[in-house]
Image (cartoon, rainbow, N blue to C red; front, side):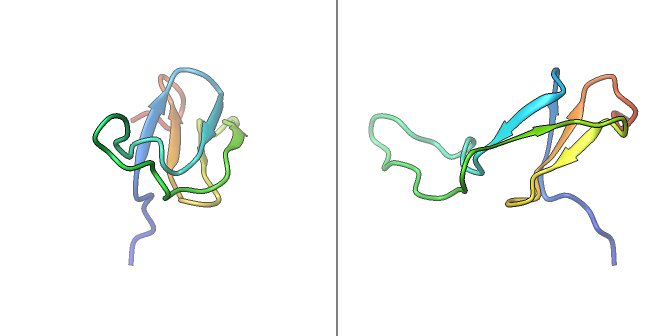
Length: 68
């Protein structure tokens, strides 16, 4: 069994935020996004990535050690 992150997002800064619903379509003609989780802020460490504790998204620092 492998343990992979369900979604990987490459970012340019070490400080990131996640609400679990940022990729859900919204706007005119769409219902408001009811999915997601509380907005949290995280810091990418020396490994070059951080995982969201709610939705398991992995944020990878572009050009960092985890960016392969």
